[in-house]
Structures are given as C-alpha cells and as structure tokens.
Length: 166
Image (cartoon, rainbow, N blue to C red; front, side):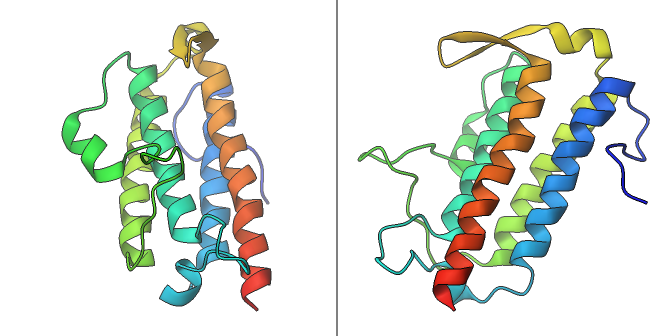
C-alpha cells in the first residue's frame, strides 16, 4: 500500500511533507531509469529546451539551496561548485552535457539524504519557522511543499522530452 508516510521516525506533518519529496524523487528515478546519454542530453525537437540532464541538475541544486535556507546557513562554496550555479550568464539553466545519469542521480541522492537527515531532526512546530526566499518570507513547511511541487513540475518537462525524442 502507498501512502504519504515514510518509514522514518519523523514528526507527523514533517513526515507527510518529506514523504511527498521522497515519493516524487522515486518517481523521477523511475522516469529516467535506463536512459541513454543521447536522450539525457536531448534538448527537444527544436534544440531550445532544457535537457533532462539540465533539469535533474537544476532540481538537485534547488533542493540543496532550500536545505541550507532551512538551516539558515550559506551554501558552502564546494557545494555551490558541485551543484550550481542556478543560472548561467544569459539567465538560463546552465548547459551540461556528457554527464552520466549515474553521476547526476548519485549527486541528487546525497541531497535527498541530507534533506531526510534534516527532517528527522525537525519538529512539527519548527515547520512554522520563517526563512527568506527571494525577498519573501516563507515557512519551512511551505519550502518543503515547494520541493515536492517543483520536482513534479519538471517531471512533466522530462516526460515531454521523452515523447519528443521518440
């Protein structure tokens, strides 16, 4: 049976939110499972879309940025170099190619593990703590929901690219 509940020992609301993140990450892994490098680097039928590799890298970067936002810490420079940047000099998601699916998912796995570790220590009352997000103030609760929603949003892009590739 599937449910919005993890097997982790988290507070009830935190558990629901992390379950959504975890469920969406597992869905992403299933969507890209066995993908060859050509499809991973495919930029759509017009060549102007973000590739699946770019989208996976972008998701992992956004997630780790939120994690450090939740912790009220700056993203360490070595992680900025590894996962970033958010945008290139033209304001687009940075182009990457010839990065294997294995490497992209291994890096993203580490982010999900760190998010899980954070959520294991998070109480439901701490979900109301305010963090800054692009000039706005939002709760950690909204941030966790945003991570799950953002993943689903880009999974739709990935599925569209897979259909175009065929």
